[in-house]
View (cartoon, one colour):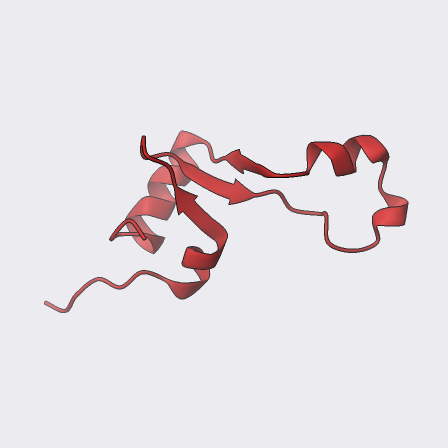
Length: 67
């Protein structure tokens, strides 16, 4: 049985916290910012925690070694 590898794309998109939650960046903040409201740009700043079901899938299929 070969080793399970971490997906390289997931390494760049997700981080695991100390308590095992998955932290991710918020989408829709890269370009065409003049068309987006100030409220949207402000709320999309920074990161957010994935929901439990999504984080379970990310940890199982994309970050099996906890990268």
